Length: 182
Image 1 (cartoon, rainbow, N blue to C red):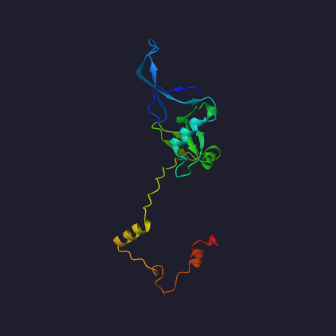
Image 2: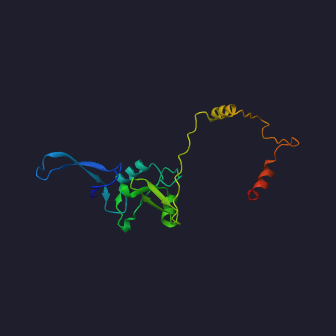
């Protein structure tokens, strides 16, 4: 592996390292000058250490709305087009979304601040998906308290229709509302 120097970058990637340098005239005395370096691989294959760092940074598929925790490393700028095998040029994608990027025309690029931006094959940006909401320890208790605060009273006959007091025929309702559900 050969380190690639990142001298004047507008953003600092969390997995670049800062290494001490030595003055040319005093090779045996380290100074307090630090240079930012990033691990680089000479091949398309991601080395194990870089793969671990990628999994640690991304913690799962980076495609908006995907929650798969395991994935494959994807070169943002393709290796065959001169893209380096560095952490700043890699993104973790699940198998499904990795295939979507390569075969279905989806695209991604890294912004100057380090965030990823995904596009459909038409070029339209994919919107960011908010993180899933937290589930309380006792969701039933929270829901009952919310209903009580709003004055909503639920009981066993709440779903009974008010006409002729007959119960709801769920099968018939599904057939009417969604005829393909048979």
